[in-house]
Length: 425
Image (cartoon, rainbow, N blue to C red; front, side, top):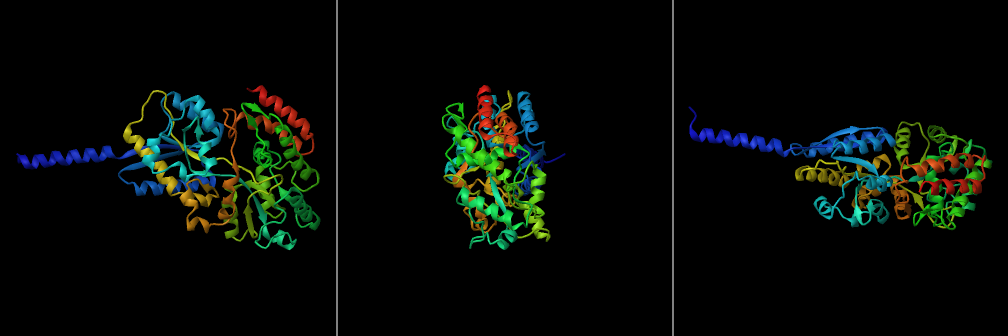
């Protein structure tokens, strides 16, 4: 027969084991991160789990990017099967809020995470704010940039003293650089652009609109006032480059990357997410000397389209999250944000300011060179019709491709775009 003290000790040990088991929270995570993004995030998740062993474990699943991901989130929330935390795009938040599938990140949540508005660029914070409430924690900004072949531009005498392309401060100057590259005859195209995909070219065109202080939506109306003319101006300069042989024609995404990496295009407009491609090729001795900088100022001032990967908490229709689970989710979002220097190796600009202000980040190239563009970022208009793979992208894409490839006049395209966008209201 066990002594009473021994029995009591056994009960206490069992209780402690039960408490310990209950203390570990499993956070169900969904993301849409593939390729280099996916590899890096999996490593960060592994690092998080190691640092929180016995307390919090992330159970992660990667789903298909775009419409399939967002549709699955919506349907899963409706039947109480959404994850505890997920990646999202800032541009899709207005629609998600309208659908009621995101939980607010409250002032108390931000305090628990040790994060605040002061840690983020104004545009990034504003992108996750709807009617004064925050619905996500920004992880990064991922704008488009100008990649360039230092060897080709150097041989043509088109690099400045700091090693960046000449003519970046005006339409005339940049067009002259493109023309000089064409005249040199060392490349097939001076500039590689994704001219066969209007969804991608939205990024470039919206940037050029922003350089004119143009707005896609004003007080709920698309292309109000002189914004039609500003869109026409943006389309006109890009169409001119294509027609004059300065920019690649009917080029899809993979072909654009191939044009640049094989040396057939001296420069390329693409997302910062292609930085790992360049780094890996160069490390293996398969790529020339290269760089990446903010887009050229074609109109009045710098402006670059950007979106943000963010963390969001789904709102299951009728299943409440426990306080313990929410604390675990907040720790996940906070820890990864504050340890996002490694995420920058994917080319993205970390949204958490102390990371980009660190000496380690400032030593990263080309990231540190183009990260200054966060001061000039413009995001999608706040509309349920906007965002990645959204209706606005689809409408405009229809007219961008023929216009940029010389088969439709910019003014005609703008008239059609204005009609179709406002018809969706």
